[in-house]
Length: 106
Image (cartoon, rainbow, N blue to C red; front, side, top):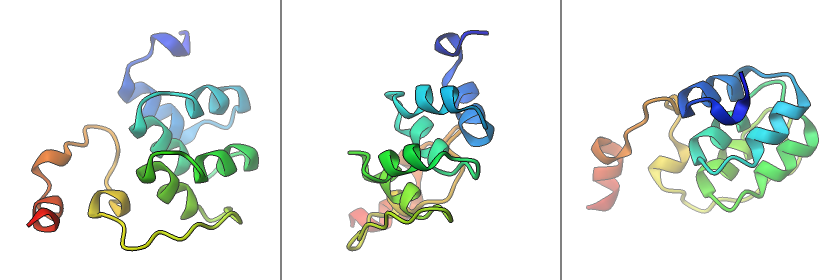
């Protein structure tokens, strides 16, 4: 199956487990924050892609990449929102009803 025809959930599953550099490169450019965030959690992540994800414009992605055990490109995140530090699985993630986000907003 072609990667461009996979669903978001299939791409998230792939992002978490792939060891293929070409797949990582494809996933790193995916417009879905959840796909890139899942890729940042992949233990087999290539160093170059890890560096790119560490400086992703979406803080949810860059924070997760900065927490990767292989990451030497540390970033400082001053008081990140609860959704940035969330460790829930990206698949089926519905932030609107999250109690941590509701408490943060008050």
